[in-house]
Length: 186
Ligand SMILES: [Cu+2]
Image (cartoon, rainbow, N blue to C red):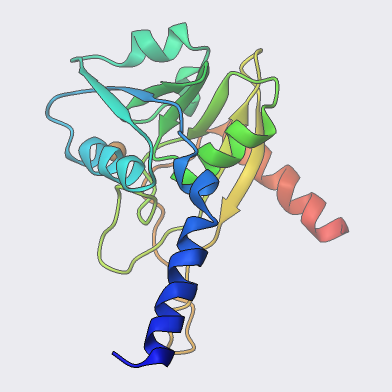
């Protein structure tokens, strides 16, 4: 090993040593309530773990009671319900959005990705990605858009239009239309 290699190794070690606060930041535990037969719920749990969240899974045949207790209306329901730092997480919410929620600490019941949109974490089907929104549910059960995910360009220059799996209910549609209207204004 020559001197330059040693130096770069030392620099790399110093760089690693300078970020321990970031690496050591402990994320709060996510408690997940899911049906034991739900496959995509398990994949979402793996997604959270990969993002650094400690996860505790509770198997239950019916998650609707938990959803109700956490203040998420059934119309925004999905296949699993979770709770983190007092916030509800309904459905396939991306881990990055959970981190954003924990950083922003809004006064709210939690986040929801209604239905099971293909391409959301845990709902991967090849490279297909349907557009979906992460909704912030307030304490009164009303939704606003926390973030939007669009479908991806397949790299062939064509935007492939795919059918949306879960039919959005009227309230979600209203939210979408309002956010789209807002986007048009800005
Ligand atoms: Cu699912």
